[in-house]
Image 1 (tube, rainbow, N blue to C red):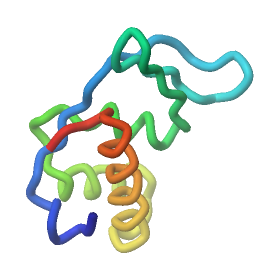
Image 2 (image 1 turned 90 degrees about the vertical axis):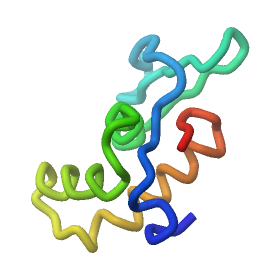
Image 3 (image 1 turned 30 degrees about the vertical axis):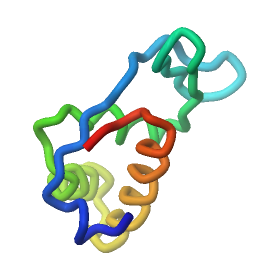
Length: 93
């Protein structure tokens, strides 16, 4: 997955937040009865932003502003997280 291919797509999260992990700062997200994932805080934050209304470009811009980082610093990591979320069936485009 690369930015140019997905920048205008609007990812939508799949699943629901169940709880926070007791051992770490991770978040537990349930996709189905037998499918539960533990997400790192940044992956959870990106997943939560996938509302089906915001484009990938908008998510990157918003994260860039909130983290006070240049867009070029967040673009590739965000696309990488979105790619992993899609592979895990936690988002759809």
